[in-house]
Length: 407
Image (cartoon, rainbow, N blue to C red; front, side):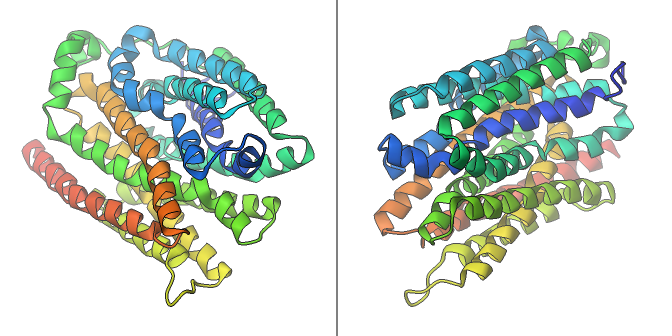
């Protein structure tokens, strides 16, 4: 079950499918300047286009987490990839913002169906000793997909057009469908006797999850992180265009920022294995996100930092901020009420992450529009980081309590 005749371990195929899903989240930022010109959309409409892909996660994350075992984890992933392929291909034919917005919401459902069952599916295809390391890699799916999209999107759009970019990623989703179909096996749910989901009805799993503090803590911290990360990364190509950089240069710089987040995720996994407290990693991540955003966007006496220093600041924002998602995935597995509620806990976390990603870009766009520029973006990120740090303190306390009770 752990290896396949094609020589690819199923868990790596699952991670790659997650990257493919994230491509569809990241494909919009490099196209925004072109879409604003061709479809005549406002800055706030652009913010909703950025976040519309998260609407399904915001409304259905917990429900999909609850029903993941009943639906079949592999079947859910295949359905999501198929939906991404169809919606993206249809999106290339959109002639107005409203139709593109509706198709982005469908892509959001496809994205959710791919990434929601992935942690549980990875858990069932690898040995327990490898779980922490592979969860660290899974935490990189979003920044990796965003980076690839930010890097390649401007060149495809400049060489062809934005519609061709949509069609190309529809074809990539179709290829990912084939890879999952061929390489990821059907895996059985844990038995009821071992605490699997089969031992509890969905009502009991839902009640147990929502009545426990752990799932709420990891979910709210993820919302505080994801809202500011997507808002800052999503508008980077637009900011760079306003600074006079070409689309290709802005795409490369934005991709570097997104890729920096991957290093933080992988580092967090290693530090957790070496015994670093989750609370320390979360505090470090939020502090550096605040400092990075302030350096990148704040204006003193009518002037900001030079472009090179701004880029270094936003690079730190993403890289050290990357400590947060991998740490939270690890905390979610530890703070779930029991083994039967792991998928539900991850679903709850995904739902609040999606809510943050849905609300963050329009909020930052609204502040930018009201202020006449991006100079107060750092104020939004600082407020979100402060809330995340307070909640991270509670996570640390919950983990210490759990460790004492286990001892």
